[in-house]
Image (cartoon, rainbow, N blue to C red; front, side, top):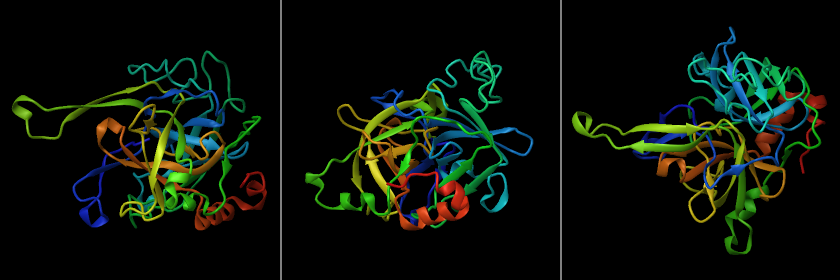
Length: 315
């Protein structure tokens, strides 16, 4: 889910640590056939030139939730949104991706809804030129970075279930009585599953380590443990969770915008994958921008309008 490295200044509370928008499920992950409404979403400029990819979850047949830094086109001023988006709601979207042709012949990723699977437009693939950014602008206003985005698709994807939004204040209870509550959360997404930092040796020693990654481009899920809401880096706007420990997983580059489910066995979304501190090969602490805040829910209702909002479940 993390697509570009971004350094936050010490004034933002991160001292010398490096932050990056989030990427893919890591460590103890497993295939995710349980959440068919979670898809891989790609964003494009006005000429349909590929910009970046993220994860998104359908809240209704046509409305998907993702991160603000995903809908954002950072090549344009003032946090403008991308011109187009395309999403594939398949567990295996791009595992046949050829880095030479930059194309997956099976699904058509990232440049079409057709491939050897046939034309999936309106079945497992949809396109959009309507999207919204809650106000994400390169971490401005940290820690309230407004990292929420919405995509309205031209084609409806009819499924038996969709993601559901948690009502305002749902996770506030986790700030107290930690030992008496279930703090396991579940994440789902596409992207990097392994991120290895390689120490620099020889003439380049002393510079930042290089990295190599493994991306399966398939939907994976993992469980992680909630840690807090009120740290200096979260301020109540994000929830903090980590994927270290037995049977735990986390998020990394490419999972951005993907859902955080709590309770973990539900379809209830309390946050989207937002950013993380570059440590432990993307297996450490992650920050997830909360969707269960009154201002966020009110913004969604306002930009979507009554008709689209009425199709979304808020528990």
